[in-house]
Length: 416
Image 1 (cartoon, rainbow, N blue to C red):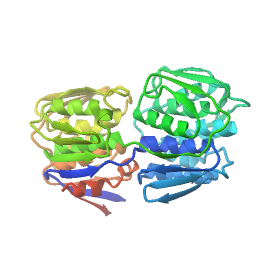
Image 2: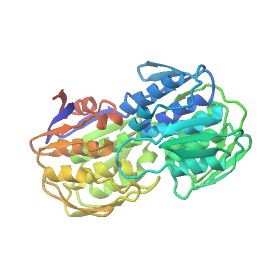
Image 3: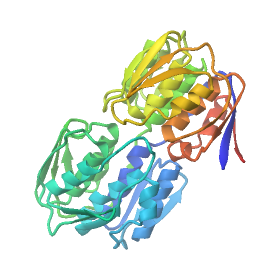
Image 4: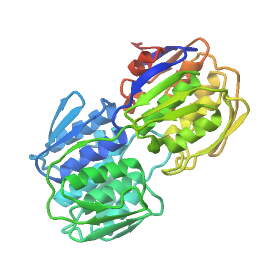
């Protein structure tokens, strides 16, 4: 078991390049299944989730070759439409494969996906969307079978703007015969990036980034070349790290507008921010408590709730954080309490009373984003911390220890 050893109370300073977005790369990798041939994806991060998706594509018959951060996916020999159960359980994003396999082969079989245990994330919205565009879906013995003699397109109206269900519907509908309208669609930048990739492949999709997406089905798609967008969650995590360590850092390869909900809150907390075309500089100030509610994009992202909660543990006054997306996303609270934080959880709300400092402790990362929160807490804490189960963190952060070391952090990864 690998773990991070972190000696705290070091001010971070310098520049860090933000990697390509995991949450954009995974559906784009899945989208390559919609056609035969070799697609090329640039700025693909080295992450456990990306590796798992690569394994799934390979087992389906694709040939995947990586050269540094460029991935070439040849889907010419893909013929299988069933995804192995053990890989489905490893990664929730494997559900993205339903749409493209159904679109190309008109048939797919999966088991229920796994991933971080942050609360129920039913895939009923995915199933509903696929049924609306002409698929027949059956659930039995833990498996989901979807097939369609013909995808007709249709009206998809989501009760909740699900990112994954929106993307699955876009991919399946790209090869439907008719027109599909997705209403109350998720608006995340990663959806805009998927639209860009699909349109390069020959799809006719418009409206991504708004709550209504229109897909005019085409008969055939072709391979494409694409560079994925920056990872706004990694970017936000490093911004918070800069503030939490009372440092001065510049994050590069970012789109500042993707992070407005985050930078607004950081300014409210007391940070000083300067933005450029593709960078953000952040300097710490006197930290004060804030109230935050997670919401679908463009609201404050649920994936940054845990890191932000870490930050306000050392801000003056009381902060209130309300989690509206996932009901079980306060697993980091017990670990932060071991480090001296004063936090009380009532349902989906955490009430945090700021303390002057945190102290080092032995803690374990319960999931991906909670793990990143513990890394930030350790950077700011007095003394040394050990963070166990770092494999969770490495599902979503590329070489986070090396990037932090380059900013001056005293963090090492060890086995033991």
